[in-house]
Image 1 (spheres, each protein chain N blue to C red):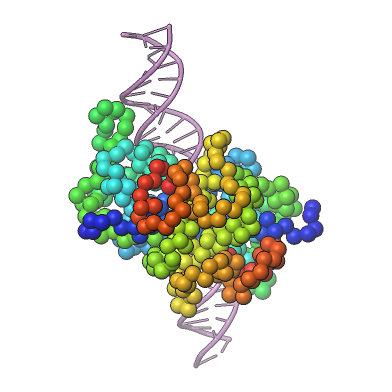
Image 2: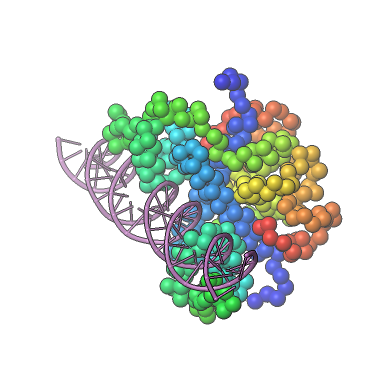
Length: 194
Length: 194
DNA sequence: CACATGTCCTTCGCATGCAAATGACTTGGT
DNA sequence: ACCAAGTCATTTGCATGCGAAGGACATGTG
């Protein structure tokens, strides 16, 4: 047993604590959404993606919102019970369930609040653009490293500090822009990683 | 409805997606812990804190691991069933439940794996120190902004980019060091925020 | 065409995780 | 000393959230 304090352990403990705190905050916000809006966070996220993607299979939807198929079934059941989506069988492949957002669902979406706490949104908006990107980049980086199971050839974290080059595209293989361009342009083409 | 793309919305969507992905990864890791170790993430985190704090009340424990009292009850019930902790009534205040880690619990803790995925730990360790701190800082910042309900006097996010000054101590009121000093020193005195 | 294998969704069992209600106890005011 | 109000833990009810198993369907190989 090491007598001297282990800095690395402390770092990890703090990261774990932050994540726990973050997860709880998301959960609490989800409950507030229920009171003020009638839908939970996962339900709203699912409905949004269903609307964005158009008629889509349940499994594709599950992948998009990062949920298991089992969980998606429950979410869809509740959304369907509210009349916001409709489930139908796929024509080509009759195993698949096609999810379609109803008129009612569209209407609700147009009145839907953000999935992020207002406090956070305000603070985020007041940040410099490079800070916003850095925040997003860090989150994506962490999510990538934690979720990717074992993609063997997974590109390891570059240890040498090539400064802020990486922040614009953390897991995207595309070339990273060195010049400042509008946020929208840099955010536009997202292949899939987040 | 705005025709031109809204960069801010995209940013928020990506942040939400990253967080969902991160939360799922944490959940999946927790399930892997059950298979390989026998305890879930929340159970292990609770046990670790119980050991670190010594005999402690259930409510204090709940605050430390960022869980509600109701949830803590369930966690403790399962830990107690395994024989890793013991519940006893407080001497001074008989309402409180004092949690004590047993020998068996200590033993299990000594063999416990990290709450973070190995992949992530390795990657984190290979980062430059300033990058580690920046990552932690960003997480703490996000957690703070999302969880603090309304602490009225909550220090708002500084909009002007005072560069990296803030990364060393995001929510800590202490003076931020401008010179590079050992990681351990900077991590040492944590008043409570994370 | 038949069958093994695989995929898609649902169901089942379990562990979080929360709020609200409840019971036990403490504390402050009178 | 008494009682109102607050605090601590538990119980209850619900919504995630997962894996495993099961049923329906698809696809490739013989």
